Image (cartoon, rainbow, N blue to C red):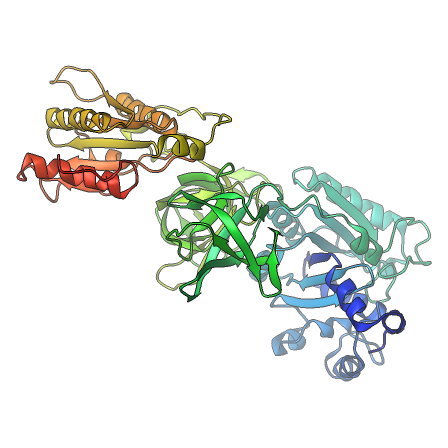
Length: 614
């Protein structure tokens, strides 16, 4: 390897010290993007070459490839060939797929992604940007800002990349004229006012000539800032990662023998320590961390992005796709959400389409309820749209069959993102960033009659749900009863309240007072459901009798944060129960048997202790 500095550094220390120093270097993930022929691949190749990070055999291959496929002239290295390895890329002189390079300097380790500039490969660029800490967007000094330059900058902003280097390339073609650089900088600054990137830096350079890449350039005396490599080695990204919200999607259950059950995965955000109290989603069962296991031994603490195996103090049913979080820091639970989507397939996105939504290792069915607007990447204007084409960017609303455990993308880049999968072709149709969970009645046009109110968001007090469970010995729960006979529903709700109260549980009966001949108030139904959730959060068994109403209004109630979903109980003939019902009590069954079915379900879900027959 032709690397004098690394060789000298290596001879001054033993191998263990060298490896330890290498492992403890910080890692920076870099993305290069921009329009076609702006010099992205050439920039990375030149960076590797000038940093003395090219092996001798790679250098020989580069010399041969430059003579055969190079575009820089006879006797010149075509540094882009270090990245563009596909036959089609070399034939056309373009980048098609995302190419990754790994390299290190005495100060830092790097993973750099070279992304294509052509508009039809924008989806590849979005994929490369999804894990980047810093983006380098190249602008050809001859052309200035182009549509694809703006598109890539907008995607960088959408994906939450907080550090952007705007590199004005090919300055050698204008003899490093400062006016050219200043004009491009002003144009980008004007466009960037609509972006949300806190750290933007500007640098003039020539990737082909190596000016301002590794060392400050003498050819650009009017530029007094650091070189590109200096910026990469010193940029501070420690504040970018979410250290507060512990999220651990379970990828695999490890069960080598009868004495060990561990849950393997990666800490995607936050930290966890032995002894921490955790909850498992979706069951919300709680336990504590017994061990944090790795191949190199146990740890006292794990943090993102470490891959570890967690062993719990209690035996809990956990499977792949579940998520382990801390009891005092739960994500939002919702079936309705608003997101920004980047469309990645030729088949347009349309309102009413159905997809598989993959989020944090889970696949759920999803329905597009509304296309709020499409975003013009040139002007950042919001435009009405009936469908979203390939590479389009839009704000959409989605409803899922099962609840998701969400964080806003701005708060957590790991659990705030998902992909949409075409259920027919199984191809990735779009990548999306979660803006917020939404209620069914906030303007999407899909709200039911029972969702006419805007629920308030309740602040969590100092007493957690886990503390209430420990004191009472059981969890609060909302139980919603409905059926074909409203009076019968009320009777059974009152009977259940009476029975559970006699067994030592805190219960509360809820029902709307109204004349028997009048239809139930949609507002009243929603209020009862919300009130039941509130009481359940206080550790009370809230039993709400909801009169008969249409199936679509009964299918689901959005759960409050940190509160388990309600039990939906239907009183009626088989086949009449709405979707989502947990238990159906048949009118033909004996009274005692019907009641015991309900009590058995409560015991099974840990609301009430197992008891004798009523």
